[in-house]
Picture 1 (cartoon, rainbow, N blue to C red):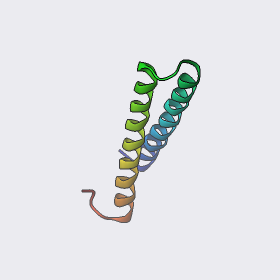
Picture 2 (spheres, rainbow, N blue to C red):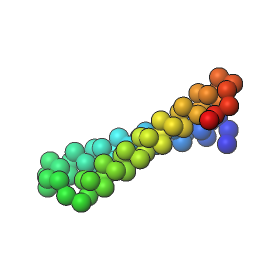
Picture 3 (cartoon, helix red, strand yellow):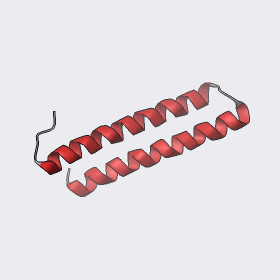
Picture 4 (cartoon, rainbow, N blue to C red):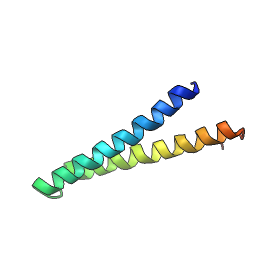
Length: 68
């Protein structure tokens, strides 16, 4: 995986996290808390954590350290 693909994957995961947060806010505003808003929050959390870990690995590789 080259640098451009790595950055694209990080940005995509952050964007998907924002989209799922928006879906959560919209669903809770209209229907209240239910199954789908909880799933949206779980997906948003998963995407955010994945993007953050990828960003950390990318910065370590760019700096010259080996990722843990």
